[in-house]
Image 1: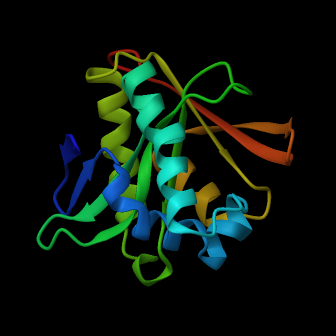
Image 2 (image 1 turned 180 degrees about the vertical axis):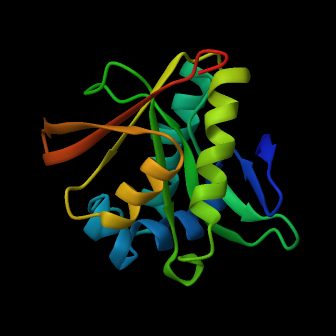
Length: 173
């Protein structure tokens, strides 16, 4: 059963569950997701359900945070995902997000990211937050700078280079 995380002026973020598999499958196979985040190789509803259980559901149980479903507040329509991800390759928690193309350019990713900065500090108790983007993802580069993150340089990950960003979340930072 999905758990409410937070609301913004236009968005609701909640945990993802197996019932969200059709949307999850659509998002992970959208052209921008594959180009900017990567091809997860998930092509069927059973594979999507398994990935949700092994990924966001398990991370939420283990760490108390994960990637969340982003819905339009007024309609409940799912438009993407955004959340706090603990990756083995990074020392600190990572801010991640991805939207379906019809919802690009409306400020939704920025709105979700700003709310997640507050959530990371106040609800989760993080003191520092990272973000990574593919080197060619100029929209995410601009978004991360807009919300106050600072570019740290290029990090070499298993699946290639990534731009690394960081922000301190201590009170008054």
